[in-house]
Image (cartoon, rainbow, N blue to C red; front, side):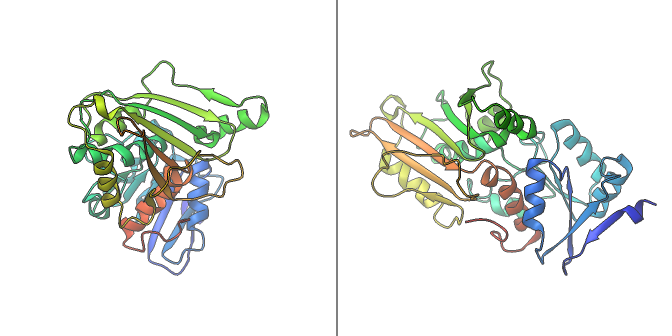
Length: 321
């Protein structure tokens, strides 16, 4: 009976993908991106059994790749159900610092793309950590920023990052312009930032949500003159430029500093991320800023990019550059 309810959307290809949690915000975007792709075959559960444990287990085991778009506890259960033959990309935060899982941010560290390509378990990065790590991790690894500095992260995101409940709240309540949260500290992104940037202390993370569906600005203020053995602004910029020189999705801003950085309510989806190093006149202070789309490079786009790398197809296929 189960086999009659599990259908395969065959798209003339050889590698199958099951999206567990395909009805959530991230899952829907991933499924849309994969629809029509000749490289993949999408395994789809009938609506009557997509929450049935036996049906999900069978789909997880049948797939070459499973993408988990689930709450953390459910993602842990799904990874266990899949067994060892199915290669997994977990879009939850459950495994981002877990042993045995490869961190799915191909650009931020030398050798990471190759590690993802050969991995059986990949954890998709969080949206805020993607911006923070793109800026800070290469500079700490190069010894141009101290690992033991108490970093702060000021960030704003579109409300889609909070899932269906927060989307509904912002759309129903037209009077919310800005929502600061995580005020009790201990945000789940902090361990991810700390570990993958190689820091001695967790950064002080101050996230907020604004009245826009998508978009994200992540800023890390750097008082270079007060930091032990910090590199110059030119050193930092050269390091990031070298790190991302061949990256199709990550670009380091060159030239004159912008007067402002905006999140547009009507912005089109984009998987690109731009990095800015904006110094004071004397170079003693620096605002390091990443701009990205929290639903794209910060979620669904990163999952599709990781899938492409793992499947051995063109890395940017299905992405919006």
